[in-house]
Image 1 (cartoon, one colour):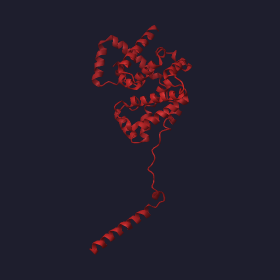
Image 2 (image 1 turned 60 degrees about the horizontal axis):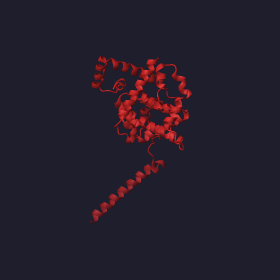
Image 3 (image 1 turned 90 degrees about the horizontal axis):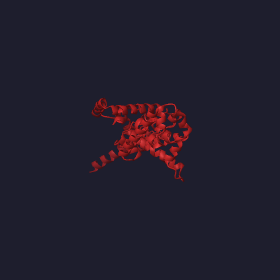
Length: 180
Length: 103
C-alpha cells in the first residue's frame, strides 16, 4: 500500500501532521495521492475539476487531521473524505438539478475516454461492462486495497451488501471472461 | 477473505488458514486466479498523477507560520526592555529593604 507500507512510519507522520507539520503532511499524503487521484478520475472527467477536487480533499484532510481518531485505517478515512468532496462537486454542479452522481457517472462511462481503452484487454472490457457503482467497488477493493468493512464505511451501506455486491461482480466477470 | 489475502491485509494466522484452504479447494483456487487477474489489471490501469496536479495538490493547505515576532523584537528594543526590567526589579528590592529597615 504505497511507499509507507510500514504502519509505524505512517502513524509517526500522522501524529506530526496533526500537530501542524506541513512537511509531514505532504509526505504522508504524497503516498496516497495516486489512489486519491484515480478515485476522483473514476467519477469526474474534467482535468481542472479533478485538480480542484484534489486540492479541496487535501485541505479537508488537513483541517480534519486533529479529529482523525485512528479507529479506521487512514486510507479509509481519506477516501471517505475524497468521496464527500466528489459529492460536493456534483451538488455544486447540479445545484438546481436532480441528476445524481451515478447518473453522471453512467454518462461518463459511455464517454470516448473509456471506449478507447477498454477493447484491448479482456479483463478491461469485463470491468467496463460493470455499472459505475460496481466499478467503484472494484477500485476500492483492488486499488485502495480496503476490506469489505472499510468499503462499507466509505460507501455507507451494510457490510453484507458490500459482500453480496462483490459476489455479483465476480459472477459477472467470470461469465464475461468465460465467453472469450 | 481471498481479496484481503491478495491485498496482504490478513494477520499471519488468517493468512495461513487461507493458504491451507487454497491447497485443498479447487473452486477457491479458480476464484483466486480470477481475482489475481483482476487485481493485476486494476493495478496496471491506475493512471500516473500528472505533474501539475502533484505540484498544486497542497496549494489550499495553509503553510505553518513561523512564530510572530513581538513589537519589541521587530523594533530591536529587547535589550533596552531587559535593562529597564532589571532597573525596575532592583528598585523594588531596594524599596523592600528600606521598608524592612524602617520597621
